[in-house]
Length: 101
Image (cartoon, rainbow, N blue to C red):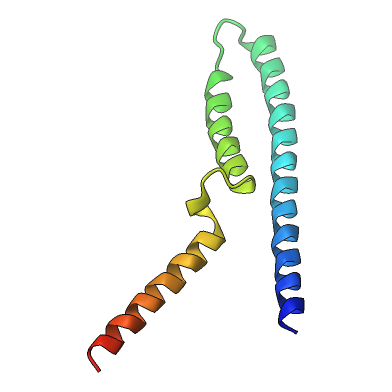
């Protein structure tokens, strides 16, 4: 029974990871389309001032953090890290409570 639960848990985590990556690709696709459209608008209506740089920089930052979350570039942002820290603090609290008994 325990093996089934761990197998199901691994499947659930893998599925969530695939959904995160899929969401990132959708974000990347909309980024490319949005930038192409804004570049067209910028060059057509105000070619002397390249204002597209500002939305490009802002959206790129958001895209970077989305990629970081989807591909776990920063492990301290993941749910696994949060769960491990919660368990660690609970164990420390339990050990500290046992010291005074």
